[in-house]
Length: 160
Image (cartoon, rainbow, N blue to C red; front, side, top):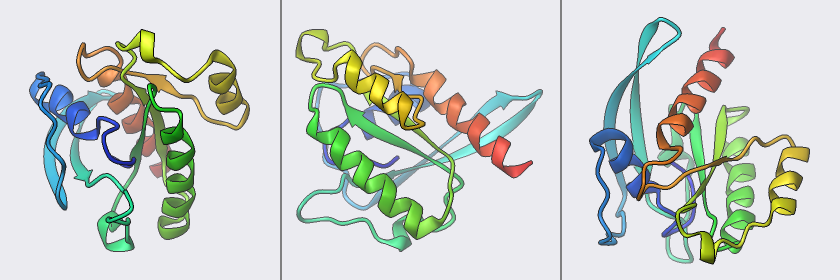
């Protein structure tokens, strides 16, 4: 899980692994690891989900935080357009650290439609640039399973 602070990385993992959501905000300190087994391509894949702290002015991602990653969800808060630019910068840095690595962009908090700042034009621009952004809501569960399965498919596709 890659993204700046408060985009919903922890909430997405909680929704995916434990089928729950809380309104309480807890800042991730360091890295928290969860696991979940998913059925995919007629088999099972065990995902080790690293909830890496949100990058901000005090905490910066380092290669040690990403060591061994097979892929990552790049999480954007759709109610804060600035998190998209920050996520794209993070993506570039992660790709330099890891080399070509499967990733899926998730536009989170789609349940907050009145606060949504990412226009259809912005989303179309992302598609033009090669992204296939998925919309999600950790609160309602919308798109959460799909995001993790999309990443699973990406990772398996690269291993063939």
